[in-house]
Amino acid sequence: MVARVIEVEEFDLVVFGASGDLAHRKLIPALYHRSQDGQVPEHARIICTSRRDYSDDEYRKWAEDALKEHVPDHDPKSLQTFLARLRYVKIDVGSGDGYDSLKAILDERPDVIRAFYLAVGPDLFGTICENLGKAGLVNGMTRVVIEKPIGKDGESARALNETVGKVFEEHQIFRIDHYLGKETVQNLMALRFANALFEPLWNAAHIDHVQITVAEALGVGGRAGYYDTAGALRDMVQNHILQLLCLVAMEPPESMDADSVRDEKLKVLKALAPITEQNNDRLTVRGRYTAGASAGGAVPGYLEELGHQDSTTETFVALKAEIANWRWAGVPFYLRTGKRLAKRVSEIVVQFRPIPHSIFSQEAGTITANRLIIRLQPDEGVQMQIMIKDPGPGGMRLRKVPLDMSFAEAFKVRNPDAYERLIMDVIRGNQTLFMRRDEVDAAWAWIDPILTAWNASRDTPRNYTAGTWGPSASIALVERDGRTWAEDEI
Image 1: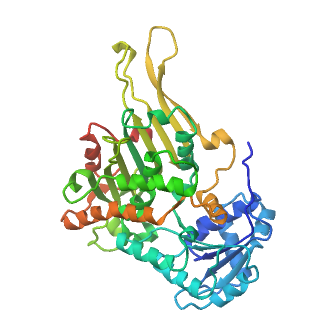
Image 2 (image 1 turned 45 degrees about the horizontal axis):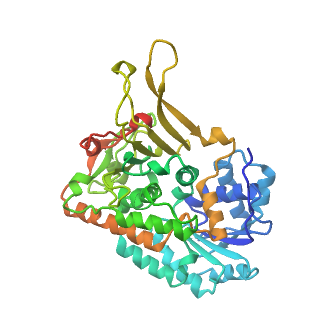
Image 3 (image 1 turned 180 degrees about the vertical axis):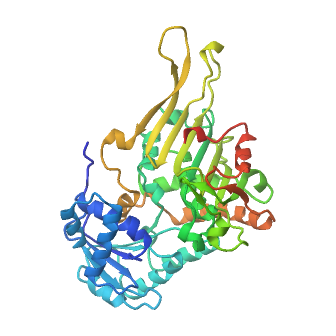
C-alpha cells in the first residue's frame, strides 16, 4: 500500500535552536523524510539558526551526521538533495545579533509562506518573537511554532501568550504537542466518528472507565536541571495527557475544521471536576523513583541523578479525573505518567461495562468485559478484546481474544513521525492538531489547584523502585474503586 503524499506550497522554514537535541533527533529527520517522499517543493528552503559559528557546509555536515544516526536507511541521493536545501545563519537571540542576516535571506522571497520554529527553551520564546517583529520579519504569510512547556502555571502561560500575541495573530501561532501528530491519536478520531459501531456506545451507559498511561523506562538523564523545575504534572499531564483525554471525551465536532475540533476539546477541559486541597489526597498520587533496575541494568534514583537531596519534584503522577457532563457523569478517567517505569509505553484503555446478564453456565468460564486499547507507542495500533467460543467439541467454553491491528503490519508503509505531519500542517496553516490559547488557559486552570494543594501539603513524593509501575498508592487509587490498572495488557 502506498501512502498518498500531497505537496505543500513553497515555503521558507526558519529553525531557531537548530544545533540542539530536538533538531538533531526529530526536526532534521522529519524534514528529510518529507523531502524524500516528495512533499516538499523543489525551491523550499530550511534556514537553520543557533549561536554556533557554522558555515553552510559545516551545518550541513552536522545535519548529515544527525541523519546517519537517526535515519540509518537513508537514500544517498535524497540525502544530498535535502542537504542542499539547508542554509545557516548565526543568531544570538539574547542580544539580537544576526537578525539582519536572516532578513536579507528571507527578503529574497517575500511572497512565500514563512514559518519560524522555536526549538529553544521557553524563556526565549518571547524574546525571539519580539525581535522578529522589530526586524520586520512578520507578515500575513508568517507562522510561528512554539514547543511546550507553555508556562509553569496559568499566570506565566498568560504572560507568554500575551508577549507572543503582540507580534503574531492567534491564527499564526502553532502551539505544538507532538502527541497529537501520532497516527494512533488521529485514528482515535476516525474510530469514533467514521464508524457507526463505537459512537452509540461512547458514554457512561456503556463505558465503565478510561485509563491513559504514558510511561517511560528512562530517567531524567541530561534533563535533570529542567525537569526539577517542572515535574511530571507540568511536563506531561498539563499538555500531552489532557489533550489525549480531550480527544477521548469530546463531543462530535461539527466538522474537522480546526476551531470546530478545538471548541469541543475546550468544553471537556472546562467540564473537568476540580481537584483541590479538599479532595487532593483521594484523587492524586505523586511519586519519585529510587535506585533499581531498568532495561536490564542497575540505575540510580532521581535524587542521585539530580545531585542533591532536597528536591520535592515528582517523577510520577497518577490522577483520578471526572468530567461533569451528561456523557461522562460517573465515569472515572485514570491518568498516570512517570519516569523509570517498568517499560516505555503510551496507551489509552477504554473499559466497557460488563454484560448485564450471562446466559452461559459456570462451566463456560468467566466472561470478561470488552476493552478497547489504543496503542500510541512503541507499536502503534488498535486492539479490541472480545469474548468468543473456544474452538473444539465438548461444550461451550468461552475465552477472551484480541482483534489486533498493528499499523506497521496492516499498511506495510513507514509510519511517519508525528513531527513530519505537524510541520507540514504548519505550512498548510491547518491548526486542528495544535492548541489554541484558551485551551492552554483551561488546562492550567485545572492543573493550578493541584499544584497549590501539593504545595500546601507537607507530604513529599512517595518513593517507588525504578523498573516498577510506580508507588503502591497509585494501585490503591484505582483499586479502592474496584478496578485495576491494565498492566496485563501492556
